[in-house]
Image 1 (cartoon, rainbow, N blue to C red):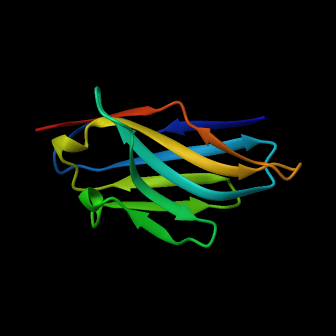
Image 2: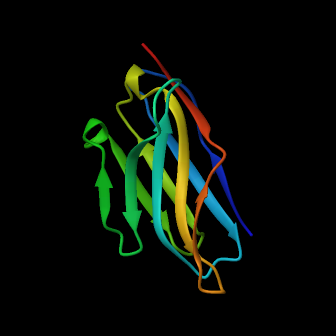
Length: 120
């Protein structure tokens, strides 16, 4: 079994910064793709940023230049640095990982979600 545990959300004023972390633990052979999504009430979950095992990254247009995704392969952890936050960034942020277990099968896992609230 694999578990993802998120941390780092909170309340911040517009223009401020936060750093989210998501650590994976359990039966992990390799982690292929790590990503962050966000969701607000009544809307679909949207991709914020992703990073591959080769450290290639992609970002939603709305966060380019403000958010940075990174990973620590040794710690099986993905980070999201959120800078220049705007009220419209307010959402629950979820980490997502595609993980290959020791048996060779790949599964997708989600974190429990962490609330980010940006006040104007």
